[in-house]
Image (cartoon, rainbow, N blue to C red; front, side, top):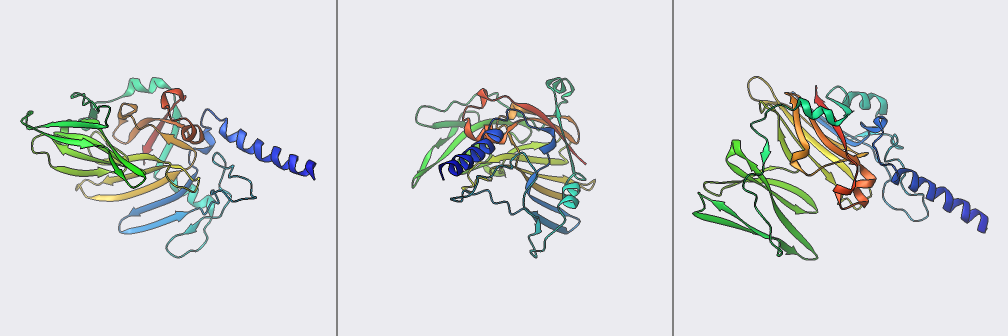
Length: 290
């Protein structure tokens, strides 16, 4: 009996160790996802893999963060099972992913929508800060706010000069980003993840790593929208990638063409267990919107 228990323990320990020890993202798992939603030309679909990632007593912990999904995907609208390979390839029709080295920074192009940090707003020891408004004639006060057993935290990410606004991050289980106009203090919601416009403004991308799932299915949630020549949004997509996490630092994002963005990523399991991102080894991921 003891021998059986020992063998079981070793098998489980090996599966946990093998994925938690990965310090670089394998190229083979870049496209692995839990959910994929696409809206185009008034048609939409949502594909989901019902992976059993949550902890179940007596069962081996989920060990496929860097492997193909174990489950069969289904159409969320009707529950019908789908061909996994078909929709895996379908995703590649809309985005292209490639790991690249740091020399890619040499191809960075100017972007009027980029996030800068000229005002250098500081947060004090009490988690509060002030935003100067109307040439410092007024200010807006932000302070971390307790909500039951949790806290909503705020930070000034920087400025978006094109909108003459500050970019503020609000975090309560999941992030949210909004603009505060520097002249009148008006507030405008931007996105769930860090906002990134292409140089022409025709493509909008936001990404964040969702760790507040309680189901052990942490993932990077990517959303993007694409406008046509008439400035009308013609395509919207979202994907939850299960193998890699993204940086929350706006300096780690840049565009190299109108439809190619580069950003820093980390292996998802390393990201979950290491709160200090500076201690993690990052990689550059190039994403092309097709």
